[in-house]
Image (cartoon, rainbow over all chains, first blue to last red; front, side, top):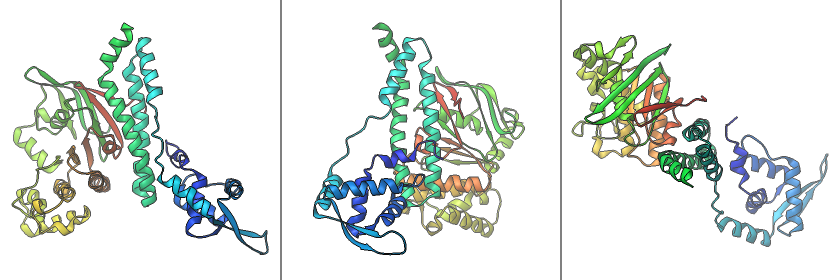
Length: 187
Length: 225
């Protein structure tokens, strides 16, 4: 398992919109949707059927998908789902709307560094510990990327660049610790 | 330091009044890939130069495979650098007038190998690094990423025990850099070559088995490996 939870990488993506996107190209059964979702978007933790059907139920209620047929078989009837015009519009809006830039660990790390300085602890140790943890996660992601396919590479790259940004911040903060210590202790 | 192929103990090195290393200890085992990280001017390149015998430390010792580098005669230290150590720098290490094949064959030719044998080995290493198609080209006619892979091939063609790589992808874009790093670490790991990988980039360091951080001439070893 990766040190970083890859579910979080995918977790920022809306399951609702992912299912809409998969339905846009063709109508599908619930189980087909689940398998396509798992194939494209998750590696470690497949989407459970309950989430697929509860999401489809919400999409049906919202008029974003519709039932496009039922196939009778030995087991339960298998419904096919198709995206509606409203669903296509909703999906297009989601696809073109930029995500809110998220603030990652800086706030927590800043509080830790300031508290370490205030309490006379070694703030560098706080930063070093975080760097070690980040780099371990980056090593695991890099290994996974190198052993995986293009989807793995793209998902891992995204996580790697975010971790890299955190590490740059840690490095710069380490270089500014003396200045920060003066300010913290003066106030 | 048990099991270390290359070990440095309490290295000190100054350039005039500038102290580059202030008591650095470091070790690397056979086949291990270790990233040496740190901001610009932290002393990481000086550490690489001391570890590889290019520079002599003011104080401290560097031991390679049971031999203390400082006690070896110059000629023997130079021989060691040619036979047991390989080097990859950021850029500019290939001879522009020679083809890529000739560049890779060069260390073997300098060691006395016949042209045909040296070039056969060079072809094999270019293939292993995925740049066989550059064999007849001169370095200025290849991309930056291809040139660096040729440089890695040249560094590994003699079968070194330790590869010293100083910011090997510093001049490359992300994708080219990634290809060079993957090729370099894959090939080195397959042939049991240890790599001392100097970098200030965490994405590069992530290709290593572990990292050490140099700051103000001192090393901060990760405590929770």
